[in-house]
Length: 312
Image (cartoon, rainbow, N blue to C red):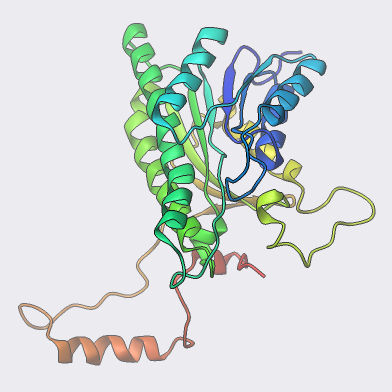
């Protein structure tokens, strides 16, 4: 029996631990040859000595199970190393078909206390890292499409977060990066559709090294699969990477604990028209102040609230 990803090759970034590891294992289980990328720094803030061990261990795990995998230990936030990563997949497997961007770090602090370095570091790894690999993968698919004079197979799965949807106190850098990733994803989806490539983003909720503080009050069950296990997220990534998801493009999907929710694009809540050539302060005050007075104080726009997904 053929597997849905048989004959396809994939890159998964940040795949040495947590979500990335689960995603790499799932893609391999579905038949894909996988390049396991992880810079290997022990600190979730990107601190500590880089190590090849996490990526190599996951690649070895895939090979032991009968799959094809190799490790890449470069920093995907470095433009040239992201180029090397895509080139490695093409050289080893003949082409690249699937890109899963997952690598990230945390530097949490309130916005009034955050340093420039803490802001830049998180934006660099999450947002620039997603762009770097996407750039080189997109160039590869565009070149192949031109050579084939038609569409080719390409899938991008990016990792956003509910921190972007519902807000996250103490994570202005992380929330901004995750929001930027959604913008990058939808733009990429439109740009690459004619080449046969899709790009989607997921907002996963899982218990990992990155989220140990967030879910500190949610203990793992004594029996059965943890509702917050990364293994709940991996099947969606496998699906989005597959031929079955050819019509899924430019989407944002929340996933955790056996639940998948497709997020709509923002809709207009209310609309006001000026009775003059342009608005005056008094007219806006008369229209907008009563409108917002009807809402609870401090309420913010958050698509996740509709889904009941506000962080605990």
